[in-house]
Length: 233
Image (tube, rainbow, N blue to C red; front, side, top):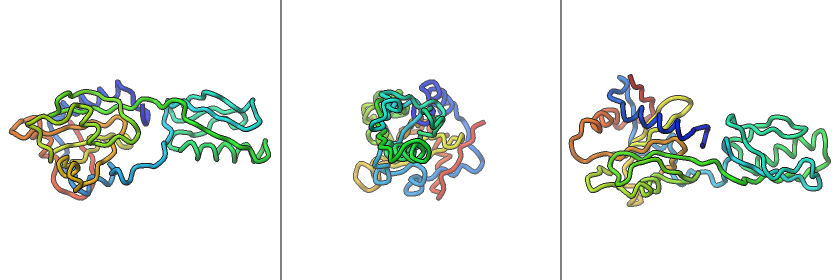
């Protein structure tokens, strides 16, 4: 899972969101442009793949078969174990950046001008949950650059009763449960950017009529300027 999330962790997060009946006294869930501060738009998405825990890598050092590996797994903490180098952080870097790191370390002590190439052999699966007013709610595997529109499409699109202006992405950031509110209609029309969803996100599509469960979330969504913590009790 991306950023250390497992499928069981995501399911637990879904349960926590579904059971949320109250929010903090200062629930600054933003909407519009403010929501993109932490959940970036497509135009701000990384152009290169970043390595994640549980990814499988290959490392090739030209002319050095003892330092070349067809498969090397990134552990759950985001590190790899590599001969001569020991433990090195891989998660959060691109393959090119990790290649440079390994080349620098090997070149300082062991080799002259080492040529190192790191590739991703197999990416760890990433999952998001799409809930609420969609035709097929559930947990879906996504890519590193999957957007909100794409995630909702995988759930077979919103229902006829969906409130497209009330789509909330819940995300865990540094151990804290955060949220941002987005307008799917504006995104479809090109008025607003399409945010990237990440591993472990929960997407809630709102209901257009009165429903007590959804209203509890709307109370937490004033049009404020910061992406803020939602505390449950």
